[in-house]
Image 1 (cartoon, helix red, strand yellow):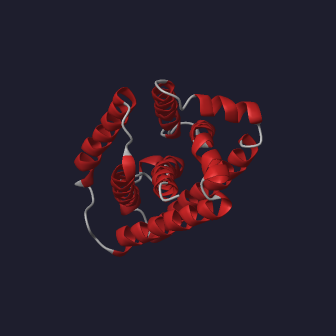
Image 2 (image 1 turned 90 degrees about the vertical axis):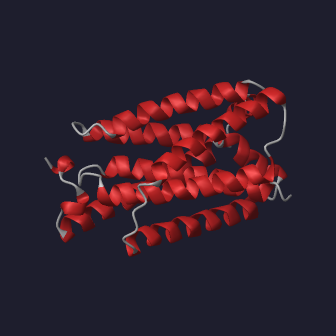
Length: 229
């Protein structure tokens, strides 16, 4: 029954426990991502294979596969009947993110500024995430209106990416800026949803939701910084 008790209606102690579990699992997810990524980047055949998938229409196939795995992982993470299945779904999503990040991190590491650039992107991403989280928890603002905006925005973004692949035009600096705004809106919306509509037992699903938005933000902050080099 814990999973069906809304966080907003729970006691202060239950809320504190939920938030602690959510953000602890988010932190563990980030650590797992870093460990997996550091291992993957040392496997030359895997790096070469992932880089080959960024060419032409293969990138669309990769994105399609990632979206499919994300859907499965999220369905598992929202399975209230099995905690082990929730964790398995969360790990599956982290694994998918680690794989799709290989090309951009490899290029950033060896051709666009190295570890200093990654550190800068991580600091900017973390600062934005903390700031947006503070806005949600320190105000009573209703961010539910962002749902429609985010839905339209993500469909437009996917359409732009597909069009860029088909017609061969570069998405450019402003696309990265737009996606950073979109990812920031996603963090606001996700945090609001977690605060007001999640159940106290849904901390794995909450962590996955935040992790997905955080990784999207990191991707485009990194892409923006790389475009300057």
